[in-house]
Image 1 (cartoon, one colour):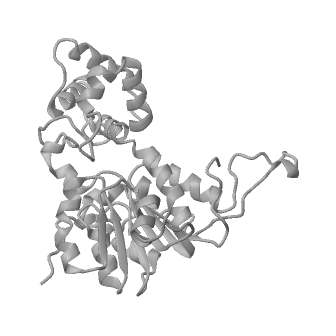
Image 2 (cartoon, one colour; image 1 turned 180 degrees about the vertical axis):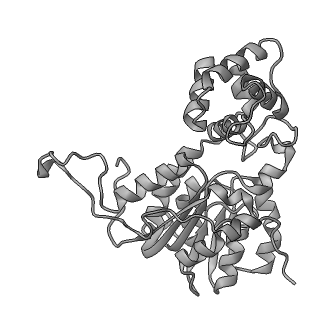
Length: 329
């Protein structure tokens, strides 16, 4: 009997329909997590999956699924922003340098923090249970505690405002700097309680007022938006003609990046004036055909089973046979 993953993959039916999984094709799961998408791909057809995750815990936990699908699943401990380099090495191991050009038939990216990471208090992603104020998806680099204990008040306010879309970012940053002068932050509950005091104990839109601050710090610590932008460019370079890209995002900042990328690559230039001379508008040939101009969202049935899916948005596109756009675009 197969061992099912503990979490519930978001928009799974819609992801599989968008990818149109076929036998003998190769897919990339850029955000392996607990393996929900990878498992579904492998069960849908006799295909191969190359998965990426920068969380070493996720890679270690993948061993059971790799054994269940021998020679069909490879899980690489790297962020999906680097998937072009490592997918080429995996698929062309004897080529020096690895072969250029398109190699894979489909790519799925499920952006943001995984359910496993949220549920582990020691990872510091959630304030629902007290834990170290860490928030790193990998075990490397600056922690959330490092950032708020050393960054300037201006930088803290900017991060909370830009990445959390938090209107009280300046008040929160000021309170952080004042508090850390006496006692540096080390725990998630300390930060959550401070934000709650800034809001005078009131919830915003039915949510804990620290929700946006924690989101902003997580995005900052893991460079999530930069990772997404780099991952989209890598996907464009890796996908074969008619290959399919599926991205599931969970908040407006991510969705805007995906929408902008696909809008441009789909042949529309959002910021070009209609009064500009025709010869001044130099567009590359469209590298994607957009499948759904409006993002797909979870059904009520899915939300009843998995409330965490409430903010999920799915966008899909099909790779054309046009060359990849220059990286400076």
